[in-house]
Image 1 (tube, helix red, strand yellow):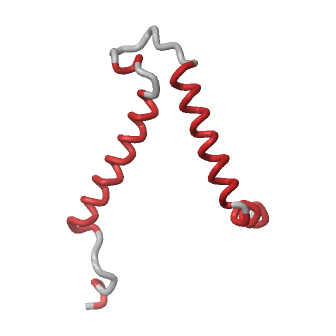
Image 2 (spheres, one colour):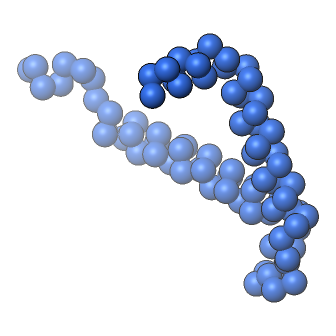
Length: 82
């Protein structure tokens, strides 16, 4: 397992390129090959709707969790030393 991690670590650019190609291929497949005739809303019929929905939802979740963390979950490192 460590050998595999080292193999990918040495080829970072290739791994990033292959990852983006795979995500792009899945997005294109989802946009044009999925049957949308039984969609529940009109928005679901637009190409890349679910890809964009997932991306925006993930970004909002990250921003919301960072906001909650700044409210009090995160504290200085020496909090318990006092």
